[in-house]
Length: 214
Ligand SMILES: [Zn+2]
Image (spheres, rainbow, N blue to C red):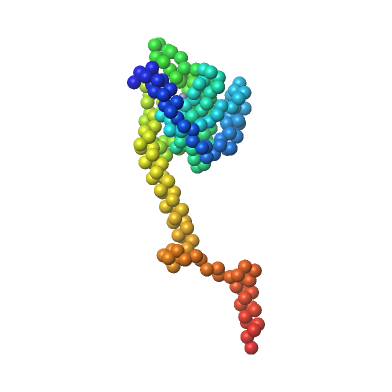
């Protein structure tokens, strides 16, 4: 695929994208505003962040227009996604507004050398662990494309991966509930009987009972 076709495909998928309800928007907005203040003070308006079925893990659109938006794959739309992952992705995408793609020796570079140098500088604390977390969670559904300098998402594999993760989480929840139930409750689903009435702890009941003995 050449660059022109890739851009056409990107534009097409962008038009077909439907943003999903963000599951951690408050935390994400706070993080974005911290990053803008610390590293991108020239960005006076915070770009919106959308989650969707994006072709790559994340990207920033409409940089040239000045009204950019950051898109992330819906796999990251999870309150369990660590802040350092969001921080690294946001810094990377925002850096595209400052260090624009350019041609070097006839080769188009979305990430020129100075881009990676600056990314390493501003995302020093987050870069390594964010890449590790993403690889640990989603490696099977991702494909690094060095020619186009991006990471493609395999939607079929990602769907299967997220489904099995969801099932595993539900299983853990069932086990957690089961561990706090007695054998009868576990087998027949009986509610746990209260061991004492509220306000009448067993020790007091025992004392009162003994007092009534002849
Ligand atoms: Zn990039």
